[in-house]
Length: 218
Image 1: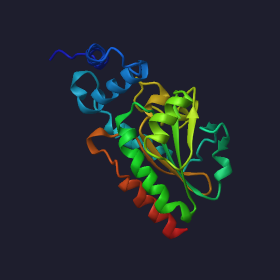
Image 2: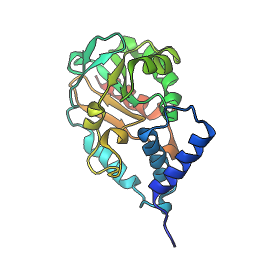
Image 3: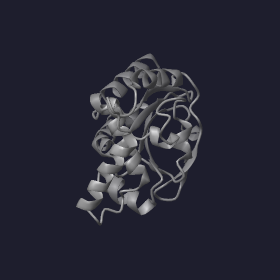
Image 4: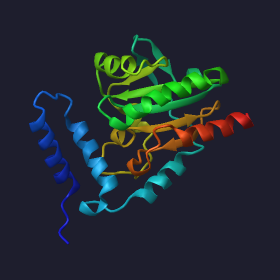
């Protein structure tokens, strides 16, 4: 059977939507890669082999490892480091404003924060490669987020969390879009979920289950 490369299909999809909306300025290389990722996850026969086992293995490899430290500016211009939150559980969601999965999870991240904030649980969104004003309007204000939203302007922090070998055709920061992490009080990764569009967990059921287990044992 003739196999059409996934990047060719992604380019055709991108071209179609550009024609439908000439003023849509966020249709950029990152969004093209995200379309390619969705095609990869949902239609592996058109250009990529199935990679679900590799993704599962990549997530498992990260569990128990020290979380890479970072220091990023929030939307007020103040710096926040992961190490400064040592002693608390930290939920991290890696996002962009144009990611529909990220937007679907945002209200549930706010709900999680309000539910657990008195239990030594911090919540952060790390936005990848987008300007402050856009992130403030399209994430913080749109979803009325009361926890910090941090700016990873060059994608290096997101890339530092990407499991090795997973989705090798994507940039490392793009692998982590719509992912969720749970860091324990000692700074170790206790939960990592990469985007799975077929079993999308917008309500963060699996993450909350693991968080409850850790809180009960703490």
